[in-house]
Amino acid sequence: MTVTLEKSVQDFISTPRQLFIGGQWVDAASGRTFATPNPATGDTLAHIAEADREDVDRAVRAARAAFEEGPWSRMTASERGRIIWRIGDLIEQYGDELAQLESLDNGKPYAVARAADIPLAAELFRYMAGWATKIEGNTISLSVPYMPGSEFHAYTLREPIGVVAQIIPWNFPLLMAAWKLGPALTTGNTVILKPAEQTPLSALRLAEIMAEAGLPDGVVNVLPGYGETAGAALAAHDGVDKVAFTGSTEVGKLIVQAAAGNLKKVSLELGGKSPNVVFDDVDPALAIPGAANAIFFNHGQCCVAGSRLFVHESRFDEVVGGVADIARGIKLGSGLDPETQMGPLVSDEQFRRVTGYLESGRAEGARTVAGGQRHGDRGYFVQPTVITDTTPDMSIVREEIFGPVVVASPFSSLDELAAQANDTAYGLGAGIWTRDVNKAHALAKRLRAGTVWINCYNVFDAALPFGGYKQSGWGREMGHEVLEAYTEVKAVCTQLHP
Ligand code: NAI
Ligand code: MG
Image: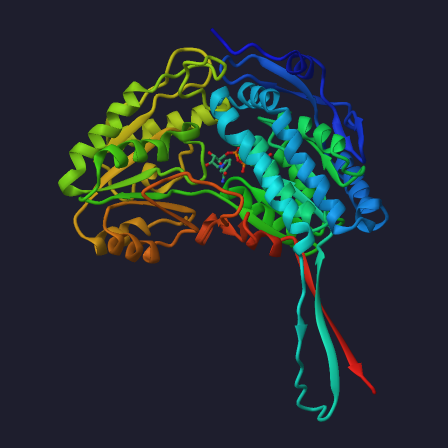
């Protein structure tokens, strides 16, 4: 049994897909295309036009024209908000189709995409639609010391930054597009979006949906292509006023360097190695499945994955044994098989990276208590894996694996635990499992992380700001915090001469 693909999905993947520039579907200037593989089989799923420098130039020009001259900049905030709301409605309307594309391209189970990725993307646009009419400045009282007796009327305007390049990863392809586009649009910017080369399909379908919702030509341009070419050209482009990036910390640093040419604004959502802490007073019926979900959700391909599990020594064997039992019971398979609980990793590159970490862990002397191997002999499947007996310097403890692999270690005191949990270059997420509110909030305060979940994990909402401390990034996505990343503040000062 597999999910039957909608005809629209079959048509979408059987036709070579083009670039979306200035409201038109066009081939790449070079004429080149690339293949996006089906990660469950390794076979080619679809052919996509491959954007490069010249296409980036054209898309930047289209976005600039839409920003400076187009109807977008003359539209009322209410009209802008209504278009963004309609994008959310259409995502919901086309939810089955989008979830199928997501499952095919990324490998994640269709049911998960349908229940999580798609509605979260729709809700993100709706949440951001409401902000369009609520972007405000202030009036400010001045007391200029060297101008005694003078009177002023001073205020601030919050304005769009301009042309924004957005470079996104493959782990939640549609949702990452939504996180990026929603705030950029509600604040009145125009965008060039580069989806990940592994998963371009849902962003291309989203371009059609945005046009159907009434988004004017050139406001969002979508350029599938590779990071080293199209992505690098966008990050360096002098016609781009801001670049927003989600992906590896390594590439985040390259983006910062590339952005230095014209000092474009930069926001970054990068890697993580998030601690998930289980205290001695927990209800195992909550904490064990909670700790398993923290790492195994989305096959561990989450920037916030709870990949370092810390369990109080008195409950270590019970909790880690429970997580290992869950790991062994997870059913792997194609994302389109309704029985599947975990699909393949997204690509051969990720498969080799993750299995490489499993080998290095073994070589360094860590103990694999569940999983640890490839699953099957076709596609990019890796067994859900639980590892113990690690030391803090091992690469599997320090580096982001981005696969279904958790390292577990015991702790005895809160002080020791806080130091261990913060012993990382990253600071994206953290989890705390306890019935004791004092412990929970005392630790939440000490953890250097942008999100702390207490007695839950992987809870996302368009209203909750998300982002990283330390090398996990710059700035926040979602919530009202993200609006600052897409606006400039202008101070206007008038002297009154009555
Ligand atoms: P990546 O950081 O290379 O790719 C993410 C995006 O950046 C893609 O759209 C890619 O085309 C683009 N990109 C790559 N090089 C670029 C460059 N020089 N200039 C501009 N754009 C560029 O991540 P990759 O290679 O897919 O995965 C490697 C590791 O990165 C993963 O194992 C994981 O640890 C981490 N990662 C973290 C993510 C997160 O959500 N924070 C998402 C994806 C990957
Ligand atoms: Mg890369």
